[in-house]
Amino acid sequence: MISSIDFAELYRRHLLHSQRTPRPASVWDARAKELSRKAQHSSYAQDFIAHMDLDGVSTLLDVGCGPGTICLPLAHRLQHVYGLDYSAGMLDCLVESAADQKLTNVTALHLSWDSDWSGVPVCDIAVASRSSMVNDLALAIEKLNKHARKRVYMTHIVGGHFIDAQIASLLGRVHAAVPDYIYVVNILYAMGIHPTLSYIETPSRLAGAKDFTGFAEKVAGSVGELTPPELATLHAWYNDNPERAQSGVAPMQWALLSWKPKITVIPARRSA
Ligand SMILES: C[S@@+](CC[C@H](N)C(=O)[O-])C[C@H]1O[C@@H](n2cnc3c(N)ncnc32)[C@H](O)[C@@H]1O
Image (cartoon, rainbow, N blue to C red; front, side, top):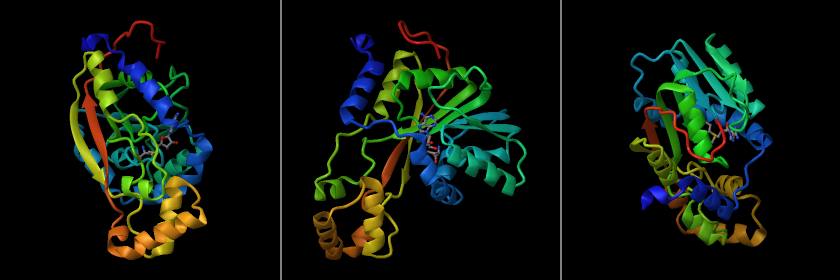
């Protein structure tokens, strides 16, 4: 019976199997300025916000907010927004951008998914945009539910690969997929919550390189430093069809799930 399947535990096992160890905040600190630049012209953020119901909403909590991709554009329309992130570099960008835009209703919360959230305000809406690859997904969902009065919005990866499958296989760097959005659906189902589901497509991280050097830099940014034989293989593939490479290969897909929060007590779980 489906009710006897512990999807929260399956998620934990899948994450362990994928060998994706949680990244320290310093990794995100190093990417903060680049992500902040991108966030300012993000069609992803526009799509995300277009799916939100802001009727009667005045406060929002954005968890793993990064440079404020979602909460910052919304600060112009809401009474107060809170951006929570464990990366000080990301929060510096959020605060700087808020000041540039003369916003005085943005509060940065330097906390982690794993922190004690007893001081985190309960808001009308809680958001987790591309930030839910955590060790304990069910606990993260419980925390969002406890901190949202009206609605929760979450995007989680579809398919479980951050790098294009074609490039990964070309370089012999095929890794196990990380647990994708279907675990979110199933964990919510076990909580008696039936989310609305849609999808947002973003260009591949490898898109937009002007030449081979730029393309190789993007690939290295995704998979780590390339060896000389890998570079040679990539170069041959690039020369074979530069337009294909410049378009960045396959786009990425994100599942956008939204639901009405419900406080659930899952037996034998830690308290959120
Ligand atoms: C891919 S970025 C997404 C940023 C933004 N939400 C967006 O959609 O553009 C992931 C963000 O989650 C944050 N993050 C990752 N693990 C976290 C954790 N355990 N606690 C708090 N924030 C975390 C990172 O610092 C980073 O800002």
